[in-house]
Amino acid sequence: MTDTPPLVRLVDDDPDLLAAQVQSLTLRGFRVEAFSGAAEALRGMTRDYPGVVLTDVRMPQIDGMELFRRLRAMDPDLPVILLTGHGDVPMAVRALTEGVYDFLTKPVALDDLMATLRRATGARALVLENRMLRRMQAPGDGAAELLGDSLAMTHLRETVARVAEAGVDALVIGGSGVGKEAVARQIHRLSPRRARAFVHVNCATLDESRFDADFLGAEPGVRVGPQPRAGRVIGRIERAHRGTLFLDEVEALSPALQARLHGVIEAGEVWPLGAEAARPLDLRVIAATQVDLGVRVREGSFRADLFYRLGGISLLVPPLTERREDVPLLFRHFLLAACARLKLPVPLMTPGLKARLATHDWPGNVRELQHFAERQALGLAPEEGGAEGPEPTLAESVAAFEAELIRDALRQAGGNASRAMQRLGLPRKTFYDKLTRHAIRAEAFRGGEGS
Image (cartoon, rainbow, N blue to C red; front, side):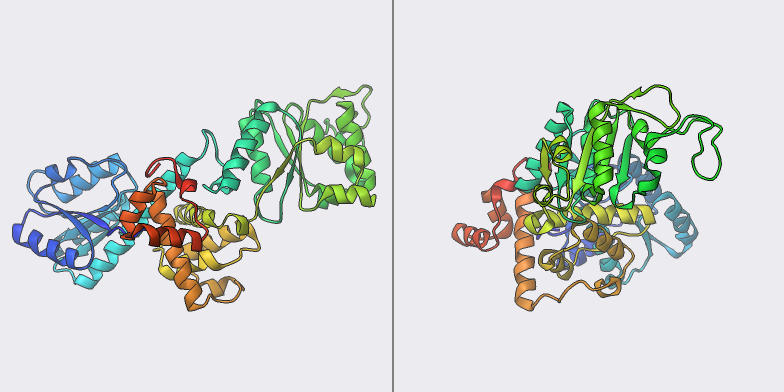
């Protein structure tokens, strides 16, 4: 992910083979920590070890399999690669079912070893960065779409937390795919209502003729549909009692449904069909829209009373074009999640892929980025997943790659500009010139190295 050479902890009890492998790996750009035994190799290992382990199988006292099991108990996501003799192949195949990253038979071709190590170190870097992303989130935060260290997302997360605690209704505004539902669910998740239902209503698909039955519910024996129901039908609004009612695409409501919903919400009670008395209703209402409802009110297509009832607190979810520095973080999160779900190896972040992440406009926002990450996990080329816009020029790709390296260095340095300069080997003036050219702010990455 950064310009730091990938790290390998090498374990072999044969001193000649150990020395030869150290030399080969070092010449190929790896940092090598060499150990002649498993006990030594285990010392100093932590769950956040930033490299991978390459170990011989047949060693005295603690063999390679036992070393793998001990490392796996410490961190199941740590890639361990076994070097085996031909007689050890059946054992190594069984080891794959236990979670060994890969095994190679001796004598191993150097190109095969390099390819395996580069895949493993790339996967390890993604795992560690994903852990860092999780630590960036507030406690209990499960909304991946709200990840990011941009000022816009930091402000949004702080606002979400305050709104959740206040218990007020809210209007979430943003384009398609920016994560409006994620914001609504996060408000619910962080609120005192978290143990109650979150009822999602897509207003664009509502059937006006079935509003009473679907939303208000019905008493036993009342005809709802072709036949009378034997039991009571609980409507969507009542299911949200003491919880959260989320009105997605609220701008799509017809004037009649706007009036019905406003009346129910304002009254704080619901009358199911056939009921002799109203039932009390305790709702928090969160609405989401892609349009300016104030304009719709002035045009007369949206009720002013419902607008002011919903829009006391507004949260604007920015598009990815306004927080480009968050794209790599989100992509890596989605890529890891897809690979874990599909049980696939994590592909490397190539310079070309980094350039594409930085230069594409992402008109579909977070949703498009998630789909792109899933296609990458499946090994599909971008063009196979549909039109992605024009390919970046060479100059654009080089600039995007340079900007990504700078962001990576700042991220690893916790926003400390001096340490980032050292990582990149840049003089102070050149470093700050590049920050200005790429519109990168070092302070946006502050918060502690690797945290």
